[in-house]
Figure 1 (tube, one colour):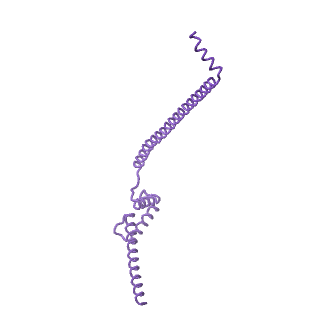
Figure 2 (cartoon, one colour; figure 1 turned 120 degrees about the vertical axis):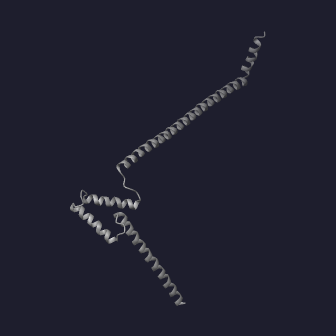
Figure 3 (cartoon, helix red, strand yellow; figure 1 turned 90 degrees about the horizontal axis):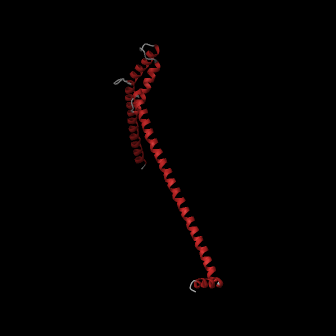
Length: 178
């Protein structure tokens, strides 16, 4: 039983070692291809590329690279490096101008949409307030009518319940007949 587990463990260790070795080889190849794409030295080893890059920087510092300064070389290397990593190309002033114009147009359109939405909300609120006021006025009118009817009913009850007033009514009705 101990021999079987040792055999399995050794096989697992071998497989893990193979996978790790292949992963390291892949990372090494990726690093070399990325470095060659960035520096533009296809087909050269990493050491040759590094020496070529160092010689570019040295020549830029000493001024033998023409009109490029060390800062320009480093800046160009940085731009090239970031464009390779992100997959985007360097932006020109024309590209930036186009993006600013598109952003301005988008901002105007979105601003108008927001203003329209705000205006709609205010209109809905004003309509709601007008309905509420109409309901309040209608409720007050109904209340006033109810009060008037109640007072009229009380007056009629009082008149009907008082016999002297009821007798006078009958006399008033007959007065015209005599």
